[in-house]
Picture 1 (cartoon, rainbow, N blue to C red):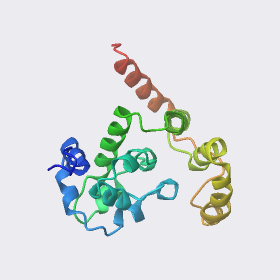
Picture 2 (tube, rainbow, N blue to C red; picture 1 turned 90 degrees about the vertical axis):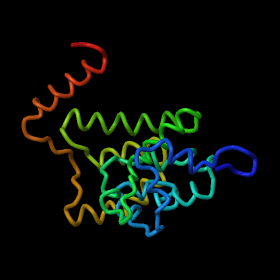
Picture 3 (spheres, rainbow, N blue to C red; picture 1 turned 135 degrees about the vertical axis):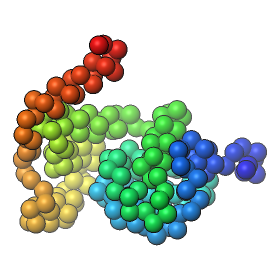
Picture 4 (cartoon, one colour; picture 1 turned 90 degrees about the horizontal axis):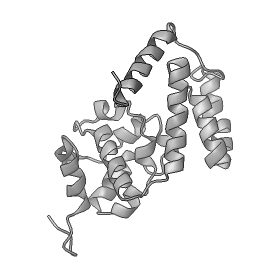
Length: 189
């Protein structure tokens, strides 16, 4: 399919570049994906909105969005989707397209990723409060204030978020696995 100007429609580019991407044509716009997303509050568009924008051929807006970059690959949206759309895989595709076209804020994306990975390497798990605090302190301090007084306070009161990171048992084993993976990816034996 082509758009009026003769180029392929963005939707078909995304579908063709994603394993199982043809399921995107079945999207009901139910919102289960966005409602399931633990990073939804930080996204400038919900996954549902991104899919509507893809359908509307809004390539520039989609590839400039922070939505794919805030996907933490938990697959909760994909598991809950009534149409079995590979939402997380679609987010990976959008990241790849954004990188190819230079449409992402490398500093923000790498800051978020490096902080997340640092916590996993040090503690064996993510530390949400530290991750959100560090990211927003450097990139959007006013949003941090709103999140802390709203959602953050509520999560703390309900015991759903810790003020300090918690280390997993036997962290040395995880660190050995991660170090071996780094060696292998660098071409070492």
